[in-house]
Image (tube, rainbow, N blue to C red; front, side):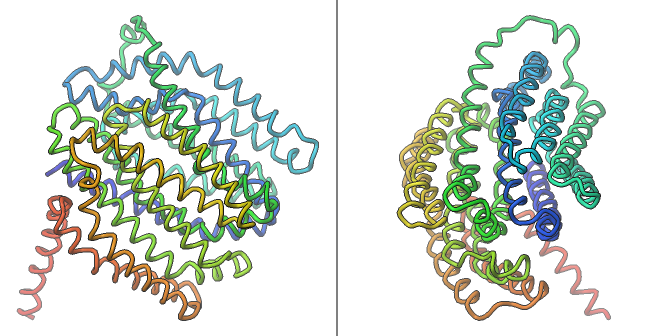
Amino acid sequence: MARSRHFAHSVLLAFAGQAIIMSAGLWLTPFLLGKLGVLRYGVWILGQQFLTYMTMLDFGVVALLPREIAYAEGRKSVVAGPVARTARLLVLQTPIAGAIAISLAFILTRNATPHAAEMRPAALIAAVAFTVLFPFRAARAICEGLQDLGYIGTAYLIAWAVGFAVTVAAITRGAGIAALALGWATMQATEAALCASRVWLRWRHAIPSWRLLRSPAPAGERLARGMWISVSQISQVLIYGTDSVIVGKMFGAAAIVPYSCTGKLINVLSNQPQHIMRAAEPGLSQMRMSESRARLASVTNALSLAMLLASGLVVTVCLAVNPAFVQWWVGGKYFSGFGLTLLFSLSMVLRHLNITAIYTLFAFGHEKLLAMTSLADGVLSTALSILFALLLHSPAGIVLGSIASTCCVLGFANGRKLSAELAVRQRDLYKPLAGWFWRMVLVGFGAYVVSGLGPAKGFVAIAMMGCAAAAAYAGIMLPVALRSSLEPYLRPVLSRFRWRTVRVVPVENQA
């Protein structure tokens, strides 16, 4: 029960941090549009893919570390062992990764255009920062493996605040696109320092001794498993990072901004449900070594429903307020229509359901299968996005391609493997979600009706509309949660709320 409360606290902290980040981001985007202009801001959105590409240069060894630490704890073995193996590989990889990152910075900005010349300092700043901080990424992975999730959320929020302040200050002083790279580098350095200090002060037992670091150990198997994770990471770039590139190539760089602004609220809020699986993954890895399949199936059903409940909340709020939100935020000319909003929402829900299967299968050790299915998803998503965009002559076709690809991969690969791993039929795996589905259809239609009543004027009106939509959704979906395998995890929260309510009543009566 204590672990469940710790998990809930970590997720709530992540939600609160993302709410703060999103609120600041609402101000930052118009600020950047005003300082950089539409075209330069669109170039920066494309340039962000450069940062994504660099994170894959560790060949997946850091992504393996949290799971291996959780496995070690489940077996009651020495945690410092997998940390030592990862540290040796990172030391060897750092000069290679640095050389590749700096070379990419020159290659991607070699064109003799003003925008390429302006991107070059930003790319070099990011490449140098990435190289220097490359080995220190293990500190966060250690905290994740030891399930120190509350501290990770706090450290990330502090690092983001420092990076945000540096970005605004540098933009104000006329640094241009380089200011965004400088802010990113500052954020990465701050988070690495905070996580490293946490490991040193609290998790000293996870720091390997010099003897353990020097002891020989085969690295081939670890690199092979890490390579599969790298393939998965490349696939994620194809799935989530190519839509802006396709829009820019087919419809021009200026078309990226309305496309991005229409999906901005959904994309930002879509990160919130994913914190549930990020927080649960180390625990699932530990349970894999000690719990029965029936218990794992129950927990997986609870996580799937929790993801969909959170995802549905995001959809409800976005369908209700997105037209008014974009109008208030950056202006109505950057809103691409309710149809695109609906497609973004449907794509997000399907992706969240697939993410639940991905995290669970990864916790069970199926990184090779996930690499192959993710690569197939990335290639299929990119191909279908281009095809539908050509057929429809609209960026909406790109989202349709993503939706079709997710359905194929979830139905024929990840969902089928997960049902086999848990020893249940695939339809039984998703049967507990039926109650959520038909209610979501009704709620979504109601949110559409609300959005058509007329645009809300001002942030307060938009916020009130969003809160009303969220409250209605919570009231409709609460019975679904209480009649599911999620109920044991909600009981402590509801009982605490009920205890506080009962305690207040006698005081008022005495008055």
